[in-house]
Length: 297
Image 1 (cartoon, helix red, strand yellow):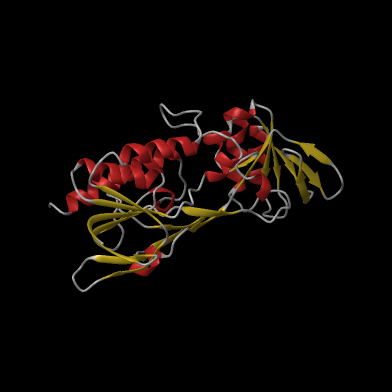
Image 2 (tube, rainbow, N blue to C red):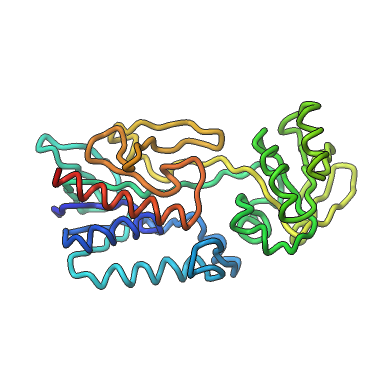
């Protein structure tokens, strides 16, 4: 299968990138493995927030509508599956395999997304996307300014602990993840964040934190710091430079979303240290425009 542009990843960033290319009347192929990062929110019956005109809708509904709109363009093809064995051929085109199909593209956009590794606290994974979150801008408002727990997984918990008083009454559960300095504790005190040093035994109910000494602190919701891992090895297979951030690895891109490999662009959560639906759509639009222009100038 030979196309002008291939977009690996059919979530928000990939859909947005492909839309720009479709409207430029170029042949576009979107490959999607069906592992959208916020699918756990859909499974919990939750909603996406912070994306203008779509605030409060389910992320699955937003993605489905985006795909439906994209596929109205006759120059767009969609292929379900996992992209593997990526390389650059002797003709300069990018090649990879999806099941038994070999795809060749002039330009490649990586919107592969990430998967989240949660801290090993019993009961945390089961509540991910339901009552355990990572972004206060996405989920903080719905906690109604109530008690909020922060399950520390790294020193980055300090940022959550300083931010979340704007959304409720937070308690930072250190859980042995790091030791705040006196300066850190003073800053938390000024913001009104409580600090609990007793280790967590497990999470029960919606967001009840059971401590090792038997105490139970009931929260409206919990926030934690995940470790992000690229959902596909395609970027590494192509030789794209990978940066290590405080919350995991991501693909290094320039201001036009181009990677260190000319002709390969990246967008979405795989190409920034943190993300959201709104940011993914914006980055995807820029990647699509830049990929198109790279064939012209």
